[in-house]
Length: 366
Image (cartoon, rainbow, N blue to C red; front, side, top):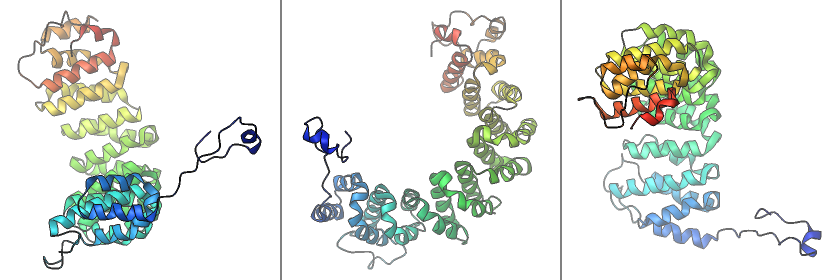
């Protein structure tokens, strides 16, 4: 019998079911004591308050006030008080208060003005926590976040994009405002907007995101391709645009587009060959590692990549010939024969081989 749900009276009278258990509401005095401990920097009080969730709603006014006291534009004199001490103390207190408000969630809507004010804090920790808290407050925060995007404060716009991205599909009303920033001259703002659109996954953003890949390329194109990957098979309409970019002379963009095609499950053969080329030609071990990971995610479709993966994993050119004949490449359990290179690349190449050809797994020491 779930807690808080009463058993039928007949069953209780017959002794067939226990009486329901209703948890008593948290007494205001308990919240007051926890707040007092919070003002004195007790991290356990912060965690206890957060664990109460919506039942800590009585603490919202005091928590909102604590967030407001973190305004880093105030003078040293005004930033001192009995709760926060100096500015550093106020930052700590603001972060703790935001952490608790995030746990309270939509029941903390009364703190929205204070949390929005914290978005413009120049300290990245405070503004990031404010964004997370707004996301936890749900749809009630979307309208205000859209208003932030319509302003010209780049710092606040980035934080708003973060909050909207965390909100995901619940932030769909903000898609037009986000689309207005994908070509923002401030690259950080544009990238954050693109990231948020990938998290929200609104069909209206598919064509604009594909356009960024083909028209801009570069870092923005990479972010747009990664955003399209978040749509999975729902982004099939963008697959052709992604495939066409596999021929660019931009390894990072090729990797992003190939990874997106793997996620979308279209043009996978083209993606596999592009990843093989990266694995064989790139001098960037990190890029090769990502290519190996993505090839592993392809599964059996990436069978043609086995020779290149074995070369990356063991550094033995003869492994290419053995693998192409269907052999696992000899006894490799005695250790890694590759000289130099990156250990993570070798490890991920071995994992990829095992995913693509499971029958080789027992012959590969990772």
